[in-house]
Amino acid sequence: MYYIDPHIHMVSRTTDDYETLAKMGCVAMSEPAFWAGFDRGSVDGFRDYFRQLTTFEPKRAGWYHMHHFTWMCINAKEAENVKLSREVIAMMPEFLDLPGVLGIGEIGLNKNTKNESIIFLEHLDLAAKRGEQILIHTPHLEDKLKGTRMIVDMLCDDRRLDRSRVLVDHVEEHTIRGVLEEGFWAGMTLYPVSKCTPERAVDMVELYGPERLMVNSAGDWGPSKPTAVPDFIMAMRRRGHPESLIRKIVYENPLEFFSQSRNFNFTPPEGLPAVEAK
Ligand SMILES: [Zn+2]
Image (cartoon, rainbow, N blue to C red; front, side, top):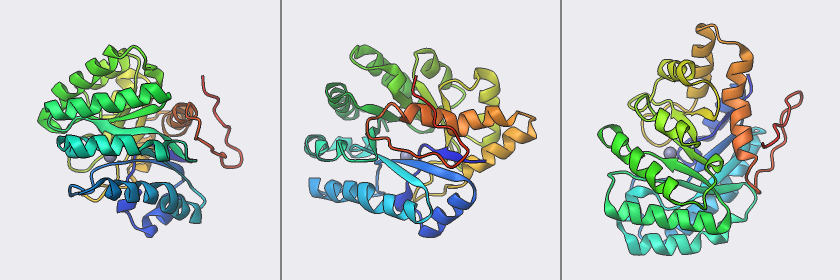
């Protein structure tokens, strides 16, 4: 089955991974900007990272006939450096109109600190002023519930934001309901060491239905599995779910969400429909 991985960090993966994803049916991916495993020292470090995301990664994906899209931000882990964060936010408009740049992300919280909230709100302000889509990272493990609530509250407080253009990622059983009920999109991240397994993702589909729901691998530089979305497809089949339902979650939903971005230019594989934005 053709699918789209809406959250995967291909800068951390090899070209062999691109080839494997293509062979498994991946036709497009979106790559949010994230933490590199170390704190970058200057705004030029981010500028070069954004150049990699907007030039070389689309080229590598193209070698295997896949579309690569991306998102710009400074992540929550580096938001403790407020001065550098503000320099990066001021520089981001250099990239936000480029082909394939879908919006601002993955912004969010990590340890739910004051500085993280300040920088999160400044990203939201830029998104609102420019009409950008937003992709959100929610914290890990013991910080997830509180952090997700803080994020949802800050989003709901900004009346300029269109909730149908915001994706809240890494939801789990205890956070998914609040995200969907407020009208946001939710992403379930399939990860071997934390977050969610394919079987738990299928449970959540059965509980909440397929509307505004996606799955991703978040494949990155840590222990992670870039082919996790096909694992979800297999888990759905083992439970007896129809192909049309699976395709909605792994292909049509990402397409519908991404189609709201002015820089989303996607040619579906032959035989697959382009999904119109609602
Ligand atoms: Zn990520």
